[in-house]
Image 1 (tube, rainbow, N blue to C red):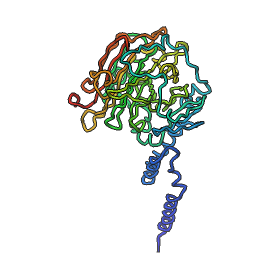
Image 2: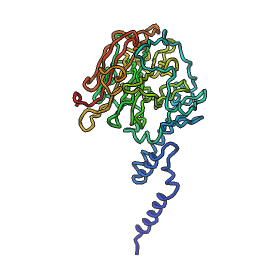
Image 3: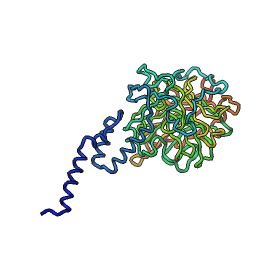
Image 4: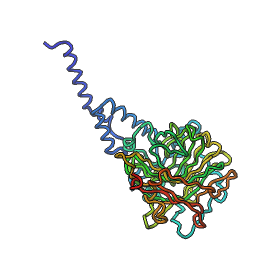
Length: 431
């Protein structure tokens, strides 16, 4: 005769089996739009390991709800991106308590001579209107909305950390802007004055990435602080990051931090920070075209400047398209001014297989190869205390590891202050 313990155990076991096999339980793991095979993989893993995987799945769904706001219109880009046209006052920045109920600001006075750019023989193509991959659809976001690249479940599954999704790795021993073990730079910088903005034209390439967890970027940094844990930066440029975006396309991006990349700040719209004002550009979307080795060159012009009246930091792309602003209340030191401006390239070197990464910077070629082959920054300028855009005088050049990535600069009547930079990463001089 069966014991009383067995009598209760069998029905409970049957009930558990029925619950796991029921449609309602399977629906718990079903993916929302945009998850695709990644969602199915998550669901399958969750069924195999209900406790740990279900917790991760719930965290992913919660983060997706936080990042992806309701949209009036959705545009499917040929490169696989989904662009959501989100009402301006619903974008992630307005989750910040200080923006609740506030209106988006109109662009402030631009720096004097902001629309003056030296051009001439040997210049790359710098179009007035920057084109992104999603523009090929011929569709646009309505007035009163901002285009935001949708975060997919597969984006979160690629991330090394859900808690730090959309943020740069925590740095130790920060020097200059972000140099530490694993991050390498070739940059030009000025640090002898108080700065209120910067401008440059940046050559666009698609450098090869040696490991999916690494990235290669080219950007402008506006920097303030002691280069300890109080470091403030505002950053904008282009980036190739397979982990963040899922491909090898160069993408327009922004970044900010107030504590040396520890707990504050993020890329693009991945936290409540940057306020977008334009309906024409999606931050995080791919830029087209790219430069071709020994062929057509393409660059984009970026300008960052501090509003003299209200203190917010604004971003302009191209000859006149204002993208948006970082509110001054986000910052400590940058609430006043910057004490350094930096231009150039950065890569992550994880030393795969114990040797230096083969991740490229810029075009992947050394600056000695010159125009059509090496990547460049040109027309380097800064904004002074009186809102004047002036040449970046006393520019210093620095390459962390010149055998891997190097930099060479100059000045002429065509490009003003400029430099070539970059390199292939691992080679005989960079083992």
